[in-house]
Structure formats: C-alpha cells, structure tokens
Length: 321
Image (cartoon, rainbow, N blue to C red; front, side):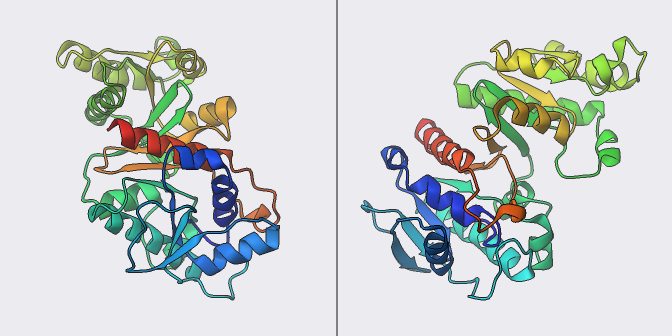
C-alpha cells in the first residue's frame, strides 16, 4: 500500500476500480483496511473489497480485490505528513509481501510509493524499496530499472548524492552491470538483448574534450564485454540522444550512469505510464514511476496510471517467467 500519508491508498483504489486489472490478475493489497476505507469515503470512491486478517488464508478466486490487513497505522495519521508510524507501517507491508511470496501465496509484487525519510524514522535503514527488497531476499546482484514502452533503462546508481554517483563510474563496476543487464533483459525478452550505454559527460565527452570517464572507464568496459564476453553492447553514446533512440526501438535497454540521467529521460517520454522494475531479485517486483506526493495526498488529485501499469506489468512478467 505504500505510505498511508501519501497517495498510495488513493492510487491503489483508483487502479483497482478498473475492471481491466481483474482480467490479468487477482489483486491482493497488503496494507491497512481502515486506511483504505477512510480513503474511499473521503474521496467519494464507490469501491468495496474483501478483508483478510494477517495470518488468514487468501481466497483463491475472489470476486473483489482482497486487502490483507496488517491494521498497523491507527486512526491518527494525517495525509501529507511524514511520520515514523506510517513509515514503519509501509516497511512492514514490504516485509509481509516478501513473506507471502516465499510461501507461494503471491506470484509478484507491485509497490506503491514509500517515503525514504519516513521508513528511516520508523527504524529501517534503507534508501528505498530496491535495497530493502534485496536485503529481504538475500540478493547480492540487483539493479533499479525503468520500463517505458520500448524504452528500458538500467541504473548504475540509485538514491545517492551526485558527487558520490560519479565516483562509481569505474570499469570493473560497469563490466559487472553490463553483463547483469544483458543477462536479465535477455531473459525477459527471451532473446539476446541489444544494450546501449549512455556517456557520463556532455556529448559523451566529445573525444575527451569534456572529461575522461568515457575513454578511461566506460569505453574499455564496453569493449571488454563485446570482445571477451560476446555481448551485443555499444557505446558510450551522447546521453542527450541515446534514450530517444532506444525508445524508437534501436536498442532493447540503455545503461545510465546515474539516477536522474535515467529518470529524467523516462519521465519526459512516458510519465504516468512507465514502471520501476527491480532486476535480479528472485521475485518479480514492479512499482510506480513517482513518489509519495505528500503535497496532494488526500485531495483526490492523484493520477493512478503508473500504478495500473505497474500492476499489469507485474502480472505480465509473472505469466512469462
């Protein structure tokens, strides 16, 4: 359900009011039933659901969507206000989702947004879902990616300071990520993936005029992956054009050197329809392409298209896995 004080409850209810969802999956919301009822009432949403208490048995073929109720928020939270209580509750939803996947009650997970500050206030020291899920599943090799129609982008680094992200642009780390990306995307597509690499500097440094990272780190990593490992990988390309080229179908995925290099391109091309996918996990996990939007929480202003897309993609990937 994400953070109860954000737009998670609203976008979930709006998404699950779309009957198209039930054609691809049987949705189970892991969250707080009282919060969802309050949200439906406050926003005038005519929607009903089946409630299963924590530890209860999930129905196999429900006529409505199911809320697996952790009842862990309480009545006093305020929409739009970050707090330790809602942060802790949102982390507990993730933990319970992974547990239910382990016991084969769930096939895939689609997550609504959490607040990194709130989960830290609640006692969880993770920068986001990606690292938290990797910890819960004992996954050592993983990466954040975004799927936006034909554009798939894999990130070298996620939620860290830009100055720190630049220090991670090293040949050894890039070779690992290129091989990982090729393996994971090829598995999803069921054919060899064509991988492009974005440069770090403007115009991929223009032959060394605007930086040395391309010549010293990125190009050697690309060459090693092509010549030694036989990957279909090219680059580094100018980062201001490569994402559009991939969106038009020239490549199957682009490796980006840092978080905003990837997400600005994805959100400009496909905001509201793109989906965050964690690659490398033993389970399928998708998420929305936006945050908690505390500034509009509880005002019936949230757009649910990315939540809908995340649910549908989780179902699709589950069926194809």
